Image 1 (cartoon, rainbow, N blue to C red):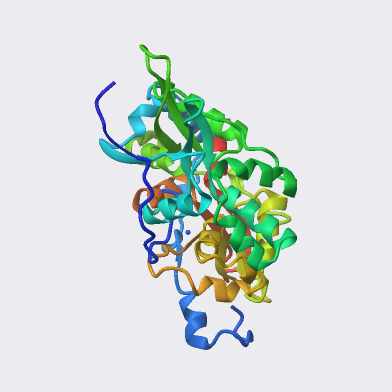
Image 2: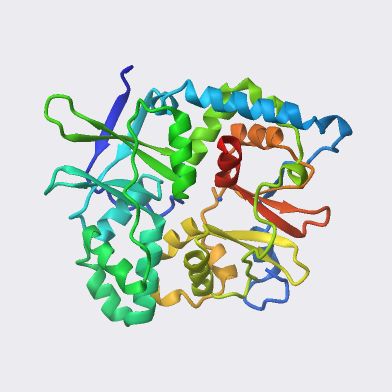
Length: 371
């Protein structure tokens, strides 16, 4: 195994208020938003369909299937360790850490998840993710006053989050991990089967037998590795309308006036990570994501979950990467080209009038490649 520079940080740094965490993205009649504000929350929409498509992009099915097989072979020939950069930092949090300090550590380092370590039993203990904070929001919103919530959260430890899950009826998180030398193909299959977005790499010390957290693989990191190193993706030229990946029916949506708590409930009920914000004509204005909840949690705004999502979107940092869209005529090749250039976690499928048609997530793309 080649050496990597590993910076293991168990400390909790001070909170930096202007960092918007990323995991590695209203109607003018709404009286609470003036026109200039409305522009600021709808202007960052980017499309992969900036140039006219031609019939030459429609390759035959055999070429597409051949490309999928070659991509799978590529994944089988590379280990999970190969995806890691030469130098990187991994934030590991002890389960005895206070939740508020854990949140500060995540926000300070610009991430929304971190592997957990059980120092009592000296072993890997899962992941702290946005889902944990969403469960916390639901619990306090339904079961406690704001004053009581603020008092309790001051002493709340990460290990107590499991109790919160049972109280709100959320399923316990899966304890997923993979050895760094296992193939990327195995990692992708595990991510797809578990419907997970990230996968910790856990090694075992050959002398002590103790587990060691090496890093965390994310869907985006894997797909970007494919985009940068696998030339076979250039043959993935069948349009989305033919390969039929993504969700196109029963899509959860909201409008600018929708209360944030309703969207949070949709995240939990549908097991989704984003909700498109549309106007009365189904035109896409923005997207509210699970990571956006972190902004409210950081501010301790458990009592503000009834505010309209349009107002919540105005609290985003200026470095928000924007909403990425595509059309049914786009191909996986064009999407991979976009992944090379930008942090893309999903694409909103729209028609020529920017009306919502569907959503293609990184999970959909990964599932298609390894199915």
